[in-house]
Amino acid sequence: MTYLTLHRPVANPFKFYNSLFTPFFATPGTQEYRWRPSADISETDDSFEVRAELPGVTKDDVHISVKDNLLTIKGEKRQEKTDDSKDFHRVERSYGSFERKFTLPPKVEVDSIKAEFKDGVLTLSIPKPEEVKPKEIPIVAESTVDIPQES
Amino acid sequence: MRNRPQHGPSGAFQGPRRHRPAQGRGPGPGRRHNSPPEGRWQGPPSRPRGPQRHQSLGARGNWGHRPPRGRGGHHRPPEFDRAVAFRKEKTRRGKSNWRPFVDFSEAEDRFEVSVELPGVSQNDVNVSVTESQLTIKGKKKQEQTDETQNLRRSERRYGSFHRKFPLPPNIVVDGIKAEFKDGVLTVIAPKTEAAKPTEIPINADA
Image (tube, rainbow over all chains, first blue to last red; front, top):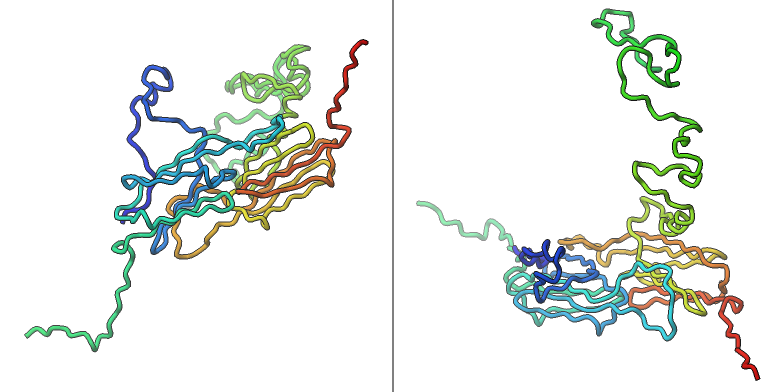
């Protein structure tokens, strides 16, 4: 049984050196994000569910895409715009773009994935393919089963 | 050495007596006040206790406060400690295992507190205000507490939370409004008229 897992790319061998000499070995296409929404993955008999916390993110700023069994949640959390300037006494919330990737189990129908956004929580429900779903095997009463007799 | 157990209840022989502590105080002249009796070397004399322990810091050393714990720590002035006290606000430990993130900002006419509460329904949040304190507490419940559901990965925190903020004196307590949208609770406290900046016109010399 394959589970819906977190996408873990191959470790970047230059990562340590990049932190020392950023301009020298910078690998294109990699971007460090300042925050990462936390997510729960749960499994029921017929679907997987991903719930990601995205407080203060509007629905239009979240983009979900699937490519090569890789589900990507991407977006940006913007600071609320106000007309006048504000002095911040305290900033604990983090803003900016984020990205999270999950590896889907094989044979998932991409069109059947549903996403819902409510109260700052993004819920993705990913139905399992038919062949993976657990099937009940009926128990047949003993008298009706024909047991081949050895002769 | 005070509550040292006796050697056997009936004085039975329990091996040779070694390092038996000397009875009574027997330090010679010039010894430290709590040094061990003569005999075995028990390490260097301990730091003096009592009021004389700060004497080595000098008269001006450490600004007259008790020295920092640990070694090599820099002294923090009390103003800094007061600022940090805001950060180390007390949450009832054991009852809540998470604290929602909060932004606290000030504009010309209001104070604004925004709290990230994703997945918390409006009925589960309680905002209360006293003259000097804003309290936000509530409970985050799991969406599904089904027996058939198996958590494969759990990063989110659930349970009750509790945060308190000191409010400045120059606000209108009756005018405080709270709004809940997209998992963010925003509390707006308007300032009193006296606290708002007033523009002073400059008269040109005619």
